[in-house]
Image 1 (cartoon, helix red, strand yellow):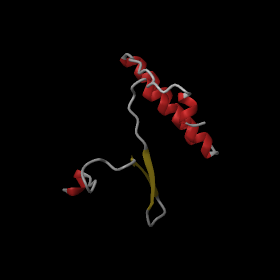
Image 2 (cartoon, one colour):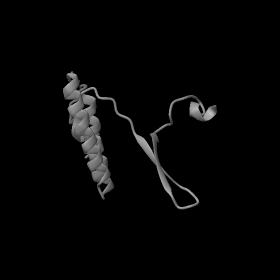
Image 3 (tube, helix red, strand yellow):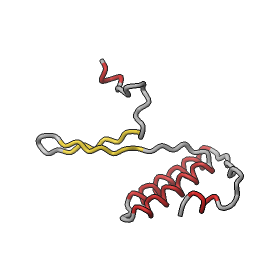
Length: 103
């Protein structure tokens, strides 16, 4: 499955549906469940397909999406810390320095 399979032969932009606040929360929750399911896939193609479907649904309902990068840091004592950050950085400037760390 790829983006062409979802879009079909229709070259027009798909409609964007306007939702009330409560329905938006429900759709966002369902999309989060779909992304969690995608992360659980063994096959990378299945994962990519589920993410593509989630992105398309989000687009249709005007819901903002972003990708995150998972980084695992291991301390000298073996303690692991998982950090999730937006793909492409924090958008804080050219060096993406955290303002709290700059003080």
